[in-house]
Amino acid sequence: MLVLKKIDYYLQCILSILMFLSIPFLYFYGFLAGLFLIGFWQLTSAVINTNSFMHAGHTPSILSYWRYTGIVMALLFVCVPLSTIFNPDDVQVIGGIAIIAAVPVSWYYLSIYLKLIKTLELRHEVSGLIKSKH
Image (cartoon, rainbow, N blue to C red; front, side, top):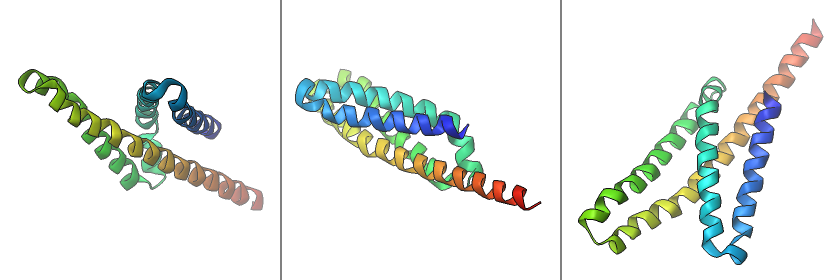
């Protein structure tokens, strides 16, 4: 399972790098497409790994991630009904704030995911040492 988590982490890192490198070629369309992909990927990864985070002692970190994600998602979802009430150009400000806020949330998930992987590696090493002494 640890190998799959590492593959997942490194593929997310590669997608993040490609997302930023695409800006000169595709302008912000490539960045936004990459942000959408990595956002969906990280939500799926977080759903699958939330239990691992909690068992590894990273409960505050994953709960913070879910709070930040909830705020960003709420801002995005509130844009649709507000665009019928207010001028859509004005509502784009809220959408822009949500998109800009999604970038640090994405980096935050990558950082806590790396901490989880390191914790699980350490536990695996320690359990191997304990087994070898018996």
